[in-house]
Image (cartoon, rainbow, N blue to C red; front, side, top):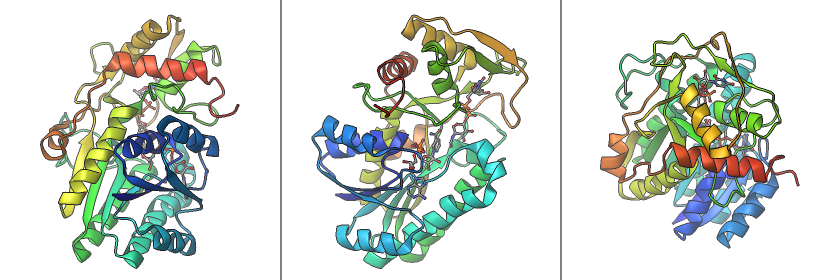
Amino acid sequence: MRVLVTGGAGYIGSHTLVELLGQAHEVQVIDNFDNSSPEVLSRVRKLTNGDMSFAEGDVRDDGFLRSVFEDFQPDQVVHFAGLKAVGESMEKPLEYYDVNVRGTMAILRAMDSVGCRKIVFSSSATVYGEPVYLPYDEDHPVAPESVYGRTKMIAEHIIGDWAQANGGTAVLLRYFNPVGAHSSATIGEHPQGVPNNLMPFVAQVASGKRERLSIFGDDYDTPDGTGRRDYIHVVDLACAHVAAVNYAHGNTGTRHFNVGTGQSYSVREMVAAFEKASGREIPCVVTPRRKGDIAEMKADASRAKHEMGWEAKLGLADMAASTWEWQSNNPDGYEK
Ligand code: NAD
Ligand code: WQD
């Protein structure tokens, strides 16, 4: 199939390119390198020997999109491009609505201009908010607590309305906590500045870049008191996109899917796994809870298994080992 991937140079997008090219899909990437670098794409090319096209530009630029869509004539779009920092979204709400909501609308308009009717969208488990019950299934009420989460919820609604109006297909993937890196250790996650997320921070402590990990609260109602999350290996997540593209090919209408493992781990369990994988000690200090954090998040991922034939295969040891391999081989990320 001809698949147009927005945000393909990003962390999840780059791993998905490898899997799509591995399945012989024809791929066109769009990215403006706001949070990535061209080096990512040359590494993906080396990894896959894959032939993919690339156009540098912004997903909010209607003229740019129209010309790329007219040239490529995609069968489907996988839409990753967006801003993703929860804290920053509270300080720059208009920027987040602009990129994540207006950018999504521009993509849908570009799809309309060439009669493309199928989209796979990067949503987030953060749309669920405070759990009413766990694990979250796709029918759990949606009540995001951040601007970022609201941009994802609104984009989900817009995409669903668009699919409803034109007989299209919307596959809305709600990712849990992506971690890990490709087994080649040539692509992975490289946050700019101080990492917000646990795994990249732990990796930088192990490599000596940061002194210690702050554990944000150990007084949660969990067995060891620290927060629990459903971490999903990025390669499993990339494979979920291949499954989603296949699902979209054979279905119409809107469908939401949780993309997680169904298993949660605590901060202390993640640290222990990382110490084992790296052979390094991770100094930790307990600090107050981070605002907006909740005790536990965990997916019921059975819908993805039954309807898309996808389930996670890689466990905690793979997540920790691949993160460490990536970090130790690329201490400065994509900067050579
Ligand atoms: P990322 O920042 O690594 O990748 C996003 C890519 O989009 C980057 O290459 C960036 O340069 C590009 N981009 C940003 N704004 C753009 C614009 N206006 N025009 C064109 N390109 C633009 O993030 P990621 O972790 O790979 O996340 C991908 C998607 O998945 C995002 O939509 C994110 O919100 C969503 N998501 C991520 C997580 C996570 O924890 N990583 C969890 C749930 C959902
Ligand atoms: C995980 C656990 C922290 C850092 C975020 C977004 C979510 C999604 C994934 C995009 C929590 C604890 C963390 C640290 C810590 N992204 N922690 N010390 O908050 O579950 O989810 O990323 O859609 O929207 O909110 O992930 O990795 O930040 O935190 O103790 O330095 O690690 O309190 O329990 P989170 P995270």
